[in-house]
Length: 167
Image (cartoon, rainbow, N blue to C red):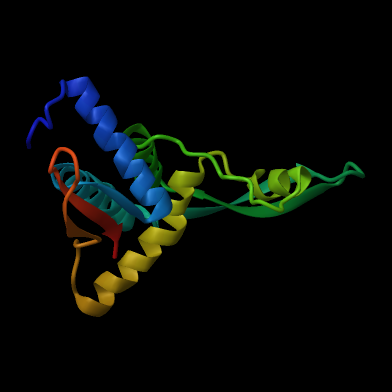
């Protein structure tokens, strides 16, 4: 693991930020050295999510409705392994917020984002984990969730540029 010319705190913050951006947008342009660091970091996070995303428990709750009558409601909650993985991933990425669409009203934005407290972690477990788990079953290939393309040298300092994207 290279130092990227930074102290440990700065380096971890940089890699954490780039990994968060990569998982949110699916693609990031950066230097080749940073891309290789982020690739390793992100693959480990995705592997953790893929191995635990199906650990869900179904429970029945008794709630009172508006008339005071007790009603049984079925709900799902994370199992022990998924909860531990979710917390570990939350510690490794920054919590990005949903962006309000251009023509979206404030009330529509609030309604769309009301149920999600941690949108990036939800995206990892609800979109990426099932997608890569089926890919693993079909191709028999675990890992390789990211791809790095070299772009050439940047003008000014001649740093090797690259694009890292999710496969």
